[in-house]
Length: 213
Image 1: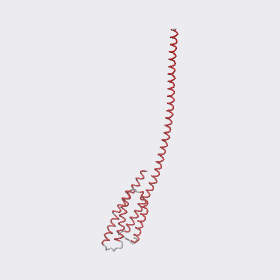
Image 2: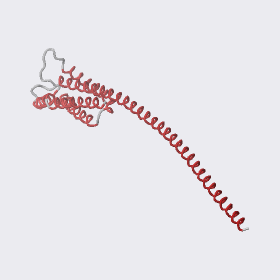
Image 3: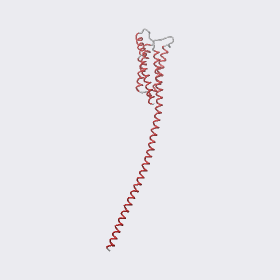
């Protein structure tokens, strides 16, 4: 009986050990299987996310490139418009200056147009300049607009001072002769220098815009 009992107990212990080992092995296999499946799904998810991120990144890059090209095209068109405005503004300013210089000149010859005609041409030059400039001023920098206004004021004052004080007066009128002398001096000095400075400013603006392209 004792031997039988020991045999039964031994068999039970052995079976228990085998069962426990089996459970441990199965449990470990399950853990490994689950971990492997989890790792595979995680890796797949990472690949999918990376692929999605790459697609989104390419979309962003493409959009940025499109915006850059669009900006360059707009900037190029704006530069062309500004270049045209600057060139035409200077041309009309010079025509205005030249017309007033001719109207107020102290040197007249047989080929010189009559003072009345020179007055009309100067007045027309004012009209042509203002009609163009007032519509295009938005394309010019504020500082340039301010400098144009200064030149315009000087030209306007010279024109009206000559018309009101000098034109039609006798040559021996002291006030008229003094005013005429001042106007002539300003036209060929300060006003001419102001126009020259504005010309340099226009050239700088065109150069800066071209360099930024």
